[in-house]
Length: 149
Image (cartoon, rainbow, N blue to C red; front, side):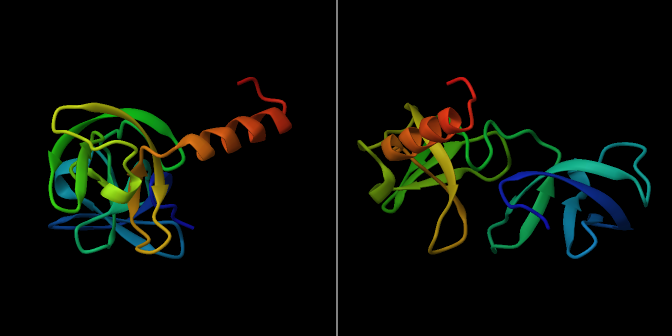
């Protein structure tokens, strides 16, 4: 099963003029031509990051995001509009932080600690700077699993 907001190891199913179609055996996903590594052939496996494009379709990239879903990261605000802030997370699409998920109003150029998550309502990857409870749960889980904090 392809995981959105995470790295996935997928097999190259076929090639097209727009890129490669990758598969996990159940679903196919596009890796646009600009991200296709040299020398890749049908049947090869690629480790790619999967996110949703502007039309909410899963898409793959070989670019390395600064964080994955479930991670904390310091990210810089690229833009702010009437709905929230857009942060640079290292791939073609910026990550959105709605105003309701901002601990304090974010400003363009500012750097903020955020937690990346899948929004329950839209199913999109988003971020929050209201991470206090999430951090507590993460630390408790790690302690329960006997991982060092």
